[in-house]
Length: 152
Image (cartoon, rainbow, N blue to C red; front, side):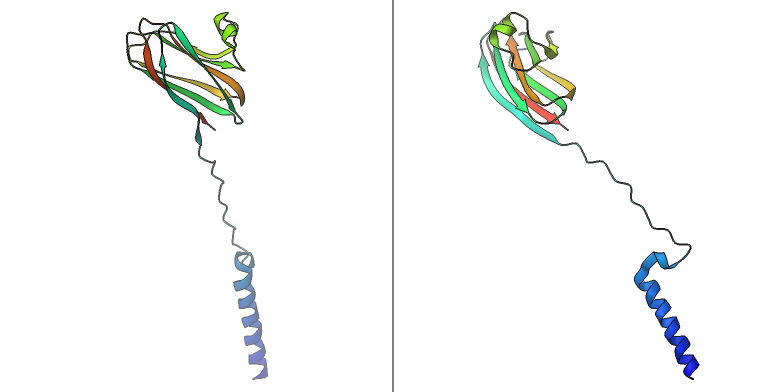
């Protein structure tokens, strides 16, 4: 009878040990692994606005970001007959530098389009100071909106 109590005590001790130790108690058990999922991309608005822009004039919009990623610029205007250029320059592209074509453009969309809107993107965009240039080449004055976002 004493031997039976001892065996029950040992069996109970082993059961408790396995219960507390979890999967490591069994020789054929494996610890499940969970692969890490990449973080979903995050899109942040850098700048936006609505402006009137006379024909043959341009807007110079400096902006700064501290992140890298894909920069997207969306510009919409009123008249499909107007030619509107959308450029993004590295650094602070001054008015005189733009007029003398001395800015370093990361993207330049200088073609006419059928619809009064353009979207340009810069992948592998590095943070820092940059300049958005929106140039109304005419023939008419414009009312436009712009939005700059960064996805990282």
